[in-house]
Length: 194
Image (cartoon, rainbow, N blue to C red; front, side, top):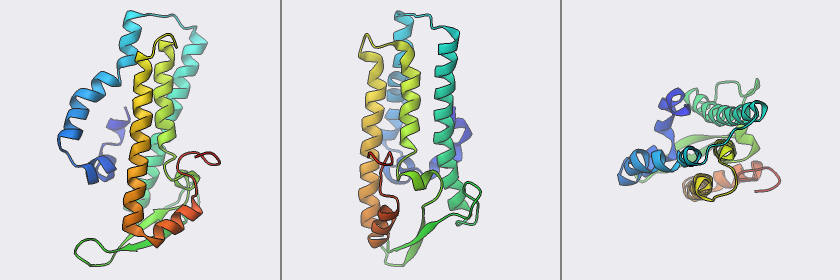
């Protein structure tokens, strides 16, 4: 669902901007995602259950909230970048670092590193609601078999790996500005834990 609401936002994601549309992305989107991400539903076809309506509604509500939070975090950064920081983040002027860097051709460029809103909580906080949405999508499949949980396990590994690759790329690109950013937003995923 988020893919349709936020389609233009994907142009600035790590998948498109750095990994490019090669075999990895094309095969992943056409084969891997449809088969793995639907595995909890496929498991339920063979192992149907009846959840009480309040439980089903609670799972639906929690999953929908996680999708919204993930979308809101991504949208917040998209608006911040599109306006050059001239926007409100949670009703306030955003805090940010103006990072200077030199790409391969040597001219100095700048990027704004957002320190407010969802991006002030943790550097990759937006991955946590994405993982949790997969957990809520999988919970109805129960805990009797590992197969439907492969989706959650795979997504967690994928997003943590992506976060570490992004951190290495940003550290190399922004240098001391990235260090200053990490000092102000010290956690990668969850404040106080990771």
